[in-house]
Each structure stands twice: as C-alpha cells, then as structure tokens.
Length: 76
Image (cartoon, rainbow, N blue to C red):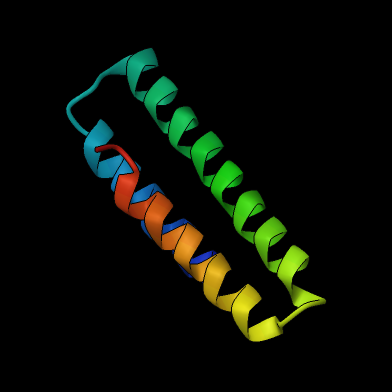
C-alpha cells in the first residue's frame, strides 16, 4: 500500500514538471520518471529483502530511507 502511495506522489511530481512540455518531449519526460520510479522501488525492496533476515525493523527503516532520499533527489 505504501508503495502505491509513493508511486502516485512520484508520478504526480513528474506530471507537474512535464506540464509545460509538448508532444514527444512530454512523453519522454514521463517515461523517464516512470523508469526512475521502478528503479527506486526495486532498490528499496532489495534493501528490505537483504536486511529482513538480519533485522526486519532495520530493513523497513533503510528501505523507507532509500525511497525518501530518492524522492528528495527526484528531478532536482
């Protein structure tokens, strides 16, 4: 559920930044945003899975931290 909410906010941010663009440039911008979103979700999930066996709380915290850092750096 948290991943879905994160994805919605990510794509809304991409949409807002692509608003002044036209045609293929806008589609390209949105596809780059989607690719970055998928990469962020995969990395966050990978971090969580790696740490789950050791300490689930640390895995959750590091996964959320990685996603938050990626969202902060998204389109800076």
